Image 1 (tube, rainbow, N blue to C red):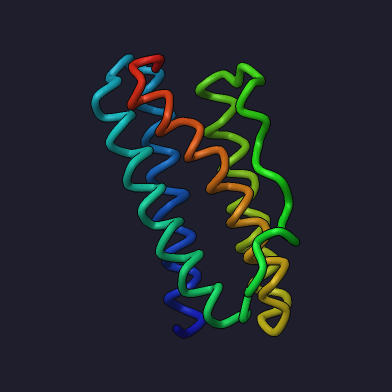
Image 2 (tube, rainbow, N blue to C red):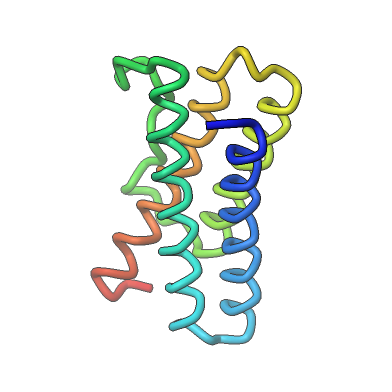
Length: 125
């Protein structure tokens, strides 16, 4: 996986999250949900590829995922995921050799996206 591919995956996920926010504001919940799923897909693939490159063997050392019992707002979850992905992109551009930090930020973003997916599936969203 080269530099351009990593950056493209992060940017695709960020674009999907931007579109999810726009759809949410327009109350187009079907489009919002699809954008969340697409962002999740990009994030999962990115984690897989970064995990191989960073040789991440033990996910126990990673930051904890968001507290599922806390009632996060949809917008808050999307924004938190965006923030983590933005930080991962900045880290990646600065220090391509330290992929563990990049992986951790993407992993955190994934936690928020999983929370949103679970709400979508249980019709709480």
